[in-house]
Image (tube, rainbow, N blue to C red; front, top):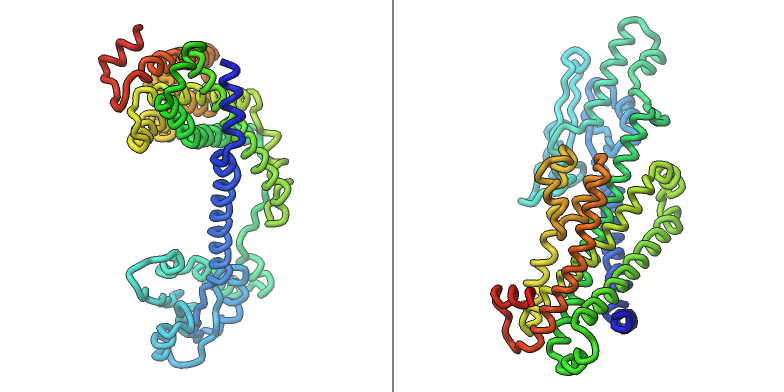
Length: 421
């Protein structure tokens, strides 16, 4: 068994498929994400809304000062109001604001956004259709300042009282600290679940093609004369499982290195993030998550091997069916995430917590948001370990008989007979 595990690990570790899946594919994904972020930031920098202001109340200077730092830029329009629509359509500005001379009496102004020119709708157009909140707030502050001046306050005092409140961040009280700790724990648990699903999805093809290739290879019949089918399948699962864990470790190390070494160069406050997060990490839960991660992966890998041993030699159909059978049940905890947050002790969630394909994700989420009894944690880990061992033995039995079947998949009755043999 160990010899098979070592061979599977080393052979696949040196393969081009592993190198591409571990380094090239994530690099392309990160490059695509970086490109999207760069385009979004460039669009944000160039996406300032230009507004023309027809000012008949004499407040343009004050309005311009109060809009500094916002995404809206104002320009004073000195022509007639009739010219505004045509010039807006030519693209000189994205909307215009008309402030009449009786603004301080009526407390009203008119805003006209630029109509959409096509059926599609982007964020900037959607934002421009309503009354811009910074502009509305600035006009409200001007009205407030004018009212304070009319009440007899000096202009400086009126401006001071009309300024918006400044809010500073201080250390959270104990209750808020516990809530923050719980939020960080849930985020880490959710990230581990996603990593488990991604690693499983990525390695399903290795196990699937490996098992089906063994069925095609007639040499395996000679191999089974010197090694039990159970040991062969267990070694294959352990070897590929170790490979998947190495892949996850490489991704974690590279990802953290990029964040904490390259983060300062792109304006990411890594030191602040580390100081804000590290004190709130629940290390005992994180270690428990890693246990569920390893057991969960080994179970799903064993399930993949068992399913692969029942499939025919059609790799395309086998891949589709195997992915559906193995990958869909672990997604169930993510689909029920909102229910877990509201009521983690719901009876349905407890039942799912002992269903092996969904157990790792559900137990991670439940322990992250609530205090799950210790006996449930211990029992679930024991059930998952026994289910993994049983699935490995079942995969070996199915494989041992399945290699004798050419070009056809067994029926459910035949599978039941193989499992009992």
